[in-house]
Image 1 (cartoon, rainbow, N blue to C red):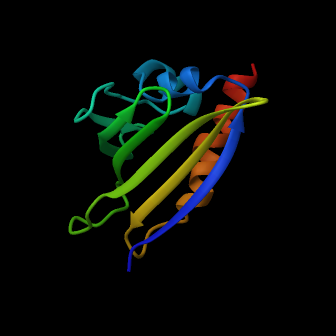
Image 2 (cartoon, one colour):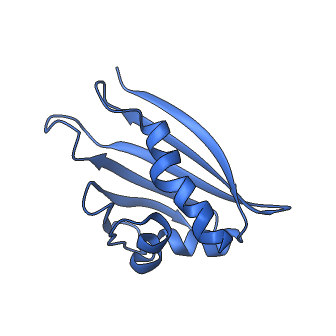
Image 3 (cartoon, rainbow, N blue to C red):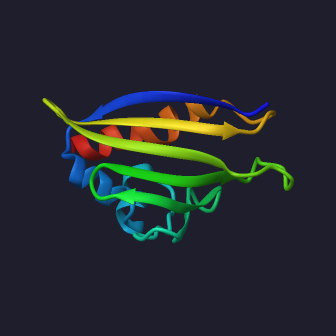
Length: 129
């Protein structure tokens, strides 16, 4: 049965800057350390982490929300995509990012740990420098 999780993390940058970085190929790669090809419009495809992650922009609310279909090379061919919803909210320190990752097929790695290690930790370093 598919499962989901939610996590909120803070970054010392505005919601606008973080939202724009997520959808910009060069900056997405710079903040995560993996090659990325991003689209900035609904319906655009994307890839991240040197092609390990692929998906499509499903909904975009400028500087507030990104919803994407999302799958990795670990998904089985018969698995449908999972879904990520990323909310960006101003906080006293900059931006609180809330990630809801849902519809994760059974048998997948621990993506909650993966988000922390391969996204949030490098992003904290990138935006702190």
